[in-house]
Image (cartoon, rainbow, N blue to C red; front, side, top):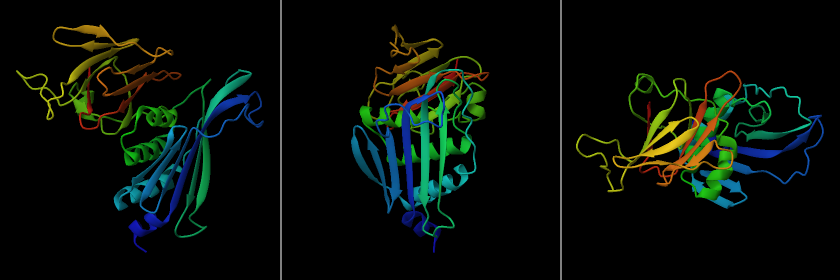
Length: 275
């Protein structure tokens, strides 16, 4: 059986729960309300189930194969749950189940979790799996995108390459991309990369907009304007007023700050550059 047919005939299910757990993690969670997100990939379709509804999108043979390969790699990784002294803690749990077309010998189920009291980003291969899934489902409305963010905000940093490391401008490669702020803040531009003499050129005449993220603030930067972007209640997340996307800043123990950027308008994209 060809790899593409195997991928199309296999069933992949991801369930993401988020709930409070008492001191003994073996005890059932308090006031369980059901999953935040369920994703099923099967039969040339990828399905997203959230509190905001059901979405069914086509899944190409190439994407299905990439997704099945990513699940096979992710199953080998261990989650770092972290140790804390709280009486209860918020846990985001990830349940992955694969019913493989080649039968029980290739099928499996695994579980991992993030402890919000002692957080660590997801392992690298799990993060790759989530990025492949998120790209496959495509652009989402605000409600569904926020439900996916419950999982995506924990993805580990993606290496943006030497151009970014040496101060150049790069386009973010995924609909949700996490990367490290090793050297401080970044500029972010929605829309096409500007050129000399025409700083707001885009293919569809939608103005590009430049932002500066310099912890702990995000600022809209223009030729004649400098205006702060209001954060959410946590003070660590910003919705870009141009509609281009959402930024979420995380700090984990003894690691550089981690910025998670969600692209809400793939046609415009988001470009980043170090300060």
